[in-house]
Image 1: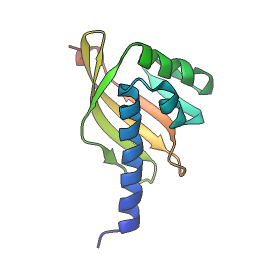
Image 2 (image 1 turned 135 degrees about the horizontal axis):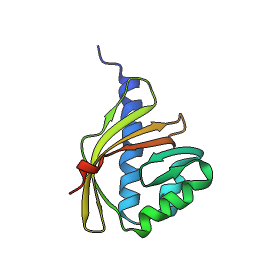
Image 3 (image 1 turned 90 degrees about the vertical axis):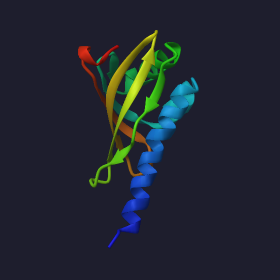
Length: 122
């Protein structure tokens, strides 16, 4: 039997991540920041940190005109996490990346972790 409540919650978390990428691709720094909690934790090889660094991280992404091509978005059964492989296009380079997001009950991103290695860049 399918748990319709859980499925709706998973779809909601997935839609937050999809909207994050849409706003980032549109160059909407303020819109991206609206999707992040005030105390968001960002772990990214090219930047990140805690609440003080969130604006710098997002504006850095927008200023670099980063474009994201997301893959299939998967929600965890833990009521928080969403994972998505994506391709990042930046400065003429393409990098395969995995993003893991934690979404709070209000539908905001409270943690963003990105994984990529030197061998993932073309």
